[in-house]
Image 1 (cartoon, rainbow, N blue to C red):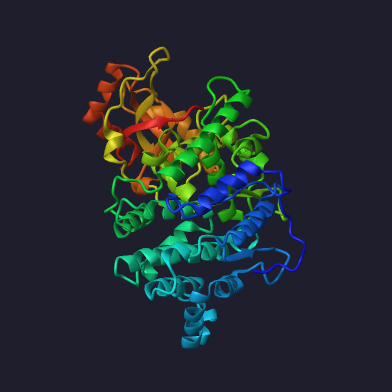
Image 2 (spheres, rainbow, N blue to C red; image 1 turned 180 degrees about the horizontal axis):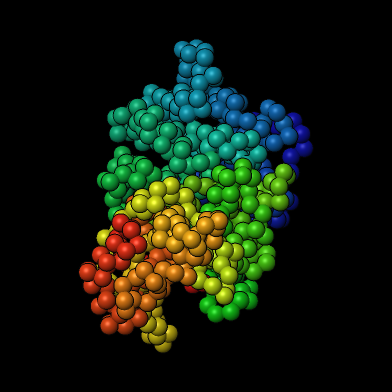
Length: 534
């Protein structure tokens, strides 16, 4: 696009080495990549360098077309004129191609209303290839460089993705045509690629570099990419995003190092990415419930972190994390710039040591949330009073997973060897309502006039009198694993623990288990459960 205003350019004796490197890349026929991406902070001179390179390519007859996006110009802050402008400039600078472009427009005057990919194929790629096929344009004279500046000033991530993919598709079309398939890649494949790109250049550039490897068939390489994006069961071990993963790993490694240097807490520095994911999980849950992001201070309180921790964990991750303050609340919306970063974090084979399983996140959040509930609901001088639950039926406590019935290792801790086994209890889960009903049925005179909380207190005080002789009247808060991987917390009657081999053996006493169930009128099965500290 011709620019009708003063354009910034590099001074003659500045950035000499960088300009020379770019021009060598532009003139080489053996360059391994068809795309060169210039990145940098605002005001660092990217547009000046792009303008200087554009003029140099023009003088050397390397660059037939340029387009400079500008957020303040309504004609250049969207891609509607992008392909048309490039086609016009190519037709003016390359007479051999002009005829084929004009024929394409005459054949379909509505071409400018179609998708950018369709426009790029009809007005840029096909005319150049047709000129080469007819012999009017030699391969040595084909266009070398198209300069596009300010892609981030094109409004909307989707528009940015479409703009880049229109160029990417053009080159894929060239590969398809070379293999005898003018319709490759298909629209379905393009939709998957556009969705995977999520408006980010680095993703598309990585895909293009992978597919464009001259040593491998592009059809097969693109299918590898598609399988990875869609997480197909046919996904091969070869990772097409290895270079992207290396970038993400480098970003996280640097952030974790900086976080460790600033960590002032006691003990070992926690995992930065685990804290980030915990913060984002709390934020998402809060938005679902309240339609506003959580206040960072509230998140720090829930997660039992130091003050200002939410700001510390994101301060070195702004290249992959978007933090948007919500004007209607004190919270901030936390999101990933690009879906590929989330895909990377969720795949343990890709992020390796940075991987945090969803089960670990939810278990950690559950324990911390229960700790707050216990702190509020319990009197330190008494046994557990009551526990909140959403289960409506006292007999509807789901049967624990089979894994909950497997005896855990004997509880121990040996920091020198890094060995640690949690204390667990073999307990029968009790529904709070069942506890209240039990008191009403068996201690009617004492329960008269008491509310639900009072009945629970009464149950805790008298339960020992209803248990078989020799069994300690011990209750504990436990986490019950139930169907669909939900953790449900409740009170349990403790029958044994894993603090010794002798204690573990008590869990095998089936007669005792049946007797306790009979006396308390419960049908829930016992199991090995995590015991929550009071």
